[in-house]
Image 1: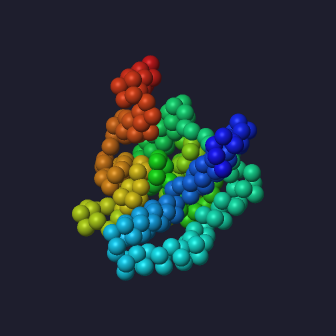
Image 2: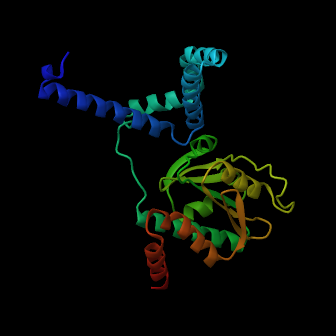
Length: 273
């Protein structure tokens, strides 16, 4: 069919068709964001690239192996991605698959920083152990599913109550996701680093462990000493005083979305004003 046979309506329909397909793909990617399925998806892309390269370079054996992997790949995807497919269908059934995404606003981030800082200072004085992870770019959905779902507004009172000793939800981590306390009593992966001080307990190892595999910020309040620590990017910042702790949270959770110099000035002015 020549291009002259295409009408304006045909071009318009084709553009709409492409945009809808891209929108559906984008929303599906948002559903699996933050799960192990993302890493598996990367593996599939690697297989496709290797298959094409082996065909181009004439590597017949490697090409045959990649061809078999792609042939049986559809069945493997159904098995491997079963939790994510189930979640997508649940979202579709609730009409949330195509709902508008919500993004953290600066005021919400400041409230979260204030709530966490207040709660940590309260618990540190009373030596109440706490473990709080704040999701950033890398999702924590896999760890949220190990705990008790809450989906509650973040407040210092709620955080304190969750970690009161001998209560049902005090043991484990609280995970904050998209301005909400997503779940409590969550299990986090323990760090296996041999360089961790022997005096550090399970909470600190869990904080380091999750920071090694995600970009989240994890706050630890020691039950033994009352010291406040922060784990990020596989490093543990120990024994922070309340002021330094609050500044670190502000830098990591607020300044990230705006120009550093402007955001820092605004935060300082708000604290001093």
